[in-house]
Length: 227
Length: 227
DNA sequence: TTTTGGCATGTTGTATACAAAATGCAATAC
DNA sequence: GTATTGCATTTTGTATACAACATGCCAAAA
Image (cartoon, rainbow over all chains, first blue to last red; front, side):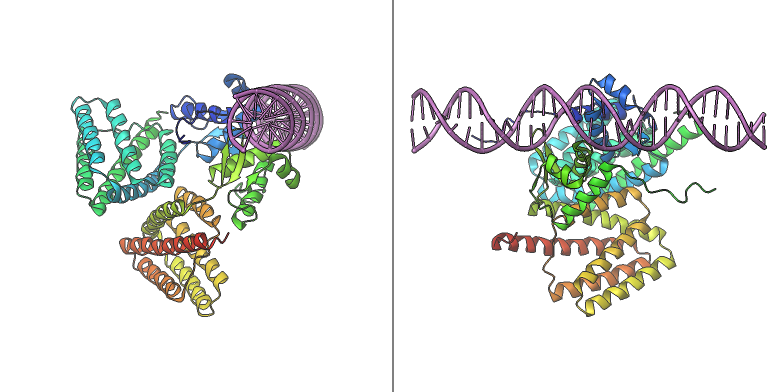
C-alpha cells in the first residue's frame, strides 16, 4: 500500500495552541504589543503552562511573538520600518517564485490561473474587497506552488503571516486597485509566455506598490491615532 | 545614563541549550538524521527535559530539527533537492542584499570590503582554504549588514545555518576557486560604482556557481557512499 | 514459516510543584 | 514632594512525577 496516502492528522497540544494563538494574533484579537500571561492564557486555552510555553517558542520562531527572559512573551508590533523591510524581502521572494514558475508551469496551471483572474476581475467589478483579497492570495499561493520550492514557500508563508498580523487594509483607491488588477493580467501573460525576467519584474513592482500603499496607510493611522 | 549600553547578557536554559545543540549540529557531531533522546540529552547537557524541549522547538523553527508527535526530534537531513532549493532562495536574498547595499553603502564600507578582499586574495594565493571560507563569510555578512534590512539578515542567517549543517566542502578545484575570487572583485567594483543591477547579477551567478559545486559534491558523496 | 496478539519496556506528552526573578506598593529618608 | 529601599505579590523558569503512546519481543495461532 502507498504509505504516503491517508496520513492521519495528529497534533500535539503545543502545535494546536500555537495554531490557535496564531489566528488570534493575525485576526488582531491579540493586539500588537499585548503581553501574554502564561497562567491566564493556559486557563483560557485549557492546557497547562508547559505546552503553552512550547507554543510560544513556535510563534517566536515565526516572528509573531518576542520573548524576553523572565519577562514573558508579547505580540510583535511591527513598525513602519519593519513593514518596509518585510515587503522588500517578500518582493524578492515573489520575484524568485515567478522565475522558477516559468520553468515548471503547465498549460493546466495557466488555465487555473486564468480562471482565478476572471474571478478576481469579477470581484473587482463588483467592488467586493474581501473576495478580491481572498482571490489575490489564492493566485499568489498558486504561483508559489508552481515554483515548486518548499523552502521558498515556507519562507514566503512565514513572512506573509507576519505581515498579516499588521492587519493592513491598505487604502486601496480606485486607481491603485485598477493598477493591481492590470498587473495580475500582465503576470499571467508573462507566465504564459514563459518570460521569467518579465514576470519577475512585474512581481517586484507589484509588491513595491503594495508596500507603498501599506506604508501610507500606516503613516495615516499613526498621525490620526487610529490603532 | 544611556540605557542602551551594557546590556547584561542573560540567557535562559532553552536558549543556551539550543545554542549548544546548534553548534553540535552544524559541526556534525550530531549527524543528519540522528534521533535525539530527551532524557539522554538532558542528562548530557545538565538540564531537565522541560527547557530541552523548548530548545527543540527553537531549532525546529530554524529548520535544523524535525519533530514528529510522540516520536521525538531528529536532526534534519537535507537532500540534494533541498540544497538546490535553499541555494535558489539564498541567491535571491543575496541579490536583494546587493541591490539594497548599493543605496546605502559608504566609502568607508567599501574600504573595509577592499581590505577583506585583499585578505581573501592572500588566502587564495596561499591556498589556505579555511581562511578563505572565513573571509568569504565575513564579506557576505558585511554586505548583508550594509543592506540594513534586519528581516533579510535574519532570513539569510537562518538559511545559512541550515546549509552549513550540510557540512559541505564543495570540491573547489582551481578553476572554480579562481572564478569565485574574481567574482568577489567584480562585486566590490559594482558596489563602488553603485550599480545595483550589476551587483545583483553577480551575486545570483556567484550563488549559482556555489550551488552547482555543492550539488556535485553531494552527488559524488552519494555514489561513493561517503558519509 | 508467517502473522497476529499481547505484554514489557522505553520514550514522549502534559500537569504540577517549587524556585527564582520581576513587579507594584508602601514606608521611610531626604 | 520626591526618591529610595524593603517587602508582598505576581509571574516566569525549571524540575519532576505521572500519563499516554510507541517499540520490540515473544508466544501462539493459522
